[in-house]
Length: 127
Length: 150
Image (cartoon, rainbow over all chains, first blue to last red):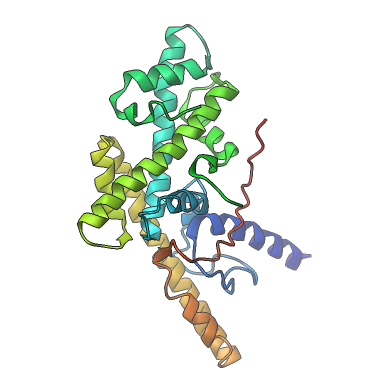
């Protein structure tokens, strides 16, 4: 009973951790056998990034000029992407509100991209 | 599974959550807007990576590091991101350190119990600093495969 619960908790933690920490190869000797966080400094750092690091890394890999990237760099790009999403959503909202709408629409995104310098790199890239 | 850059989307559920948390209550986001933001986020990753990589190459380094990404943010005119990114990086480093220490401790405990069995496995835990882009097995399965285009 208790063991089953512990295992469930451990596998959930495993999933989160897998997307957060990217330790490889995944020998998995640290995660599977019982309570996940045993150390004193058990900051759930996998939750520092909402976006899965493995997906971010896969995107980075798409660049043929990139050979190696530190775990930290993958994490920072993930975090920056999060900030970017927040920023563009908020900026687009301004345009929706101008149109007295409470629903963000595609055209609000287009307006934001056109008007804001930092988003110039997006021009012509979205479907 | 030949993946082109354009095909690599970030999980819808996560993007949606980030958007919702950034906007006030009562605001909705159309499906098309959400999709566009998700695409934009992928483009952002590609652009940031390329930019960061050029800093690494200038420094004759093969490994892209956090400093390169910070420099890229400045180059891309996203200086406003730098303070929260620095903070997040510190927290991340602490977490990594704690985790490494915890797993080192676990390994030591196991060694006491098992003897030599753990020696091979422990070698795999040393090198967690670099993401080898070229020849990794790519066996990761995130729990967040929410790619259903609704």
